[in-house]
Length: 191
Picture (cartoon, rainbow, N blue to C red):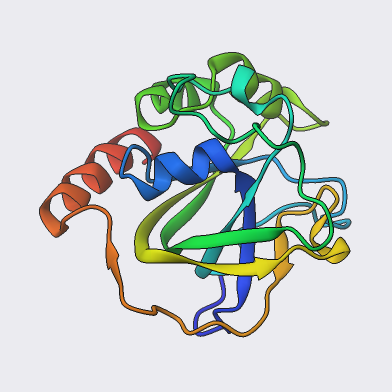
């Protein structure tokens, strides 16, 4: 991860997962990588970034959330000009690549993805692995709206956003003690 990079980078993630991160129900990111990640594949290139919510049509079947609370797919995928809400800002505490399925499976209680989805991502490609990051999430009292542009589409993780202040009166979604306990529990699993 690069330290001190500009904070106008967005990390594309399903809306249901962004909500889980933004409400403290999850502080972990798991990623295989998109087809536009280049020859080197995916990596956590940035240690500070905004969550850019996506509205992938089938995500509600691949996350473990209450359907009444899941508003992520109600309007279909973003169209050019739609107002995209940016409300959550992340700071990556650490990032690791996991190649032991037993460790990955032990992380289930720390995220909302279904086991079958995580397994599919882990098994995808020549090497069985998944990238994992612990993030400290802060939330804005009100989301900052940006217009959706064609450049945000496609199977890529990182997108360049218009200039945004780093914090804009945000606060962490988990308290210091709660986050420290969570970090310790995760580190016991991933090593």
